[in-house]
Length: 364
Image (cartoon, rainbow, N blue to C red; front, side):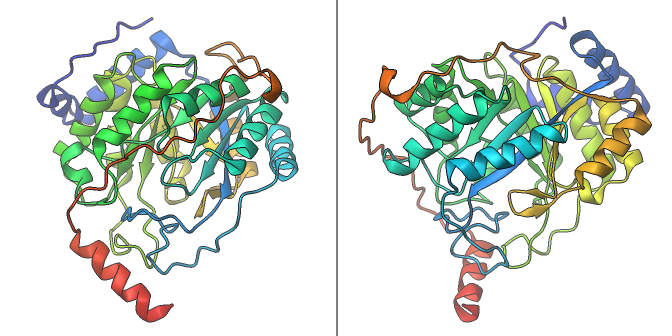
């Protein structure tokens, strides 16, 4: 096992990121092999259980209600619909189902109770269950844990400094507080971010400082390449280069040696060779299926062909941590408290977000 360091500085991470590429790859691959099987990659399926209509103003997101995009909204899926999708994912090699709802934060009530039942249902299929539902309180995290949740995803997105250039409707500390609430349970943490939003290398290092100095570090960290969607404030951003992705993956692997590094959004823009370099650099998880919530993703059959070509094997569920026990609703020790937490709404405007919002008004 690799020794995990929790006091990385931005300067140290920048030095790693800017290391000559061949040396960077060698170091990352060496560290990767100390904590992980280099020929095993987890396959996860991301399912949008409630799409569109989000009140946030995230500059990258086509689900924000204030922007005009081609995303069609839908109400919360039924438990049976989710079970059918989970069984389909399992049949194609996925060991984890990640359910995403376009909410600012979880609210106690019928819909959250329905999500809890989805978690129970998928856990009973012997699959890892992950949710990304926005900000959550400690009590809500405990209820998810009782239902059998394996992981909770809550991305930091970028550095604290650049975050304010992308999102104005929630605060960075709220992200950290949500992660802290999850840490009070037995649920693992999944947290990462996006590159290619116009940030500089210092911001990428800043995000890794925030993630790597958490103790414990997140069990998994998605590294997303921005998929610029028409109608969003970031629609004109050029795709990030594969070399930036490789460097980001390698740097993440070095500073977070035991974390599962997830090669996430943007894979449709990567060649097999580029993805292979990312796996060599330490990525050991992908999302399969034709969509990542609302953006395109490689076909699962193409992914399996790539795995065969590279000699990779899908990771079995509960390899890193034992399967949680499911507590049925009547036996739950935690009940809905009807909480109304005061999550932050920062008082600043982002010009490009405002421009996209005004443009949407003329198109709707």
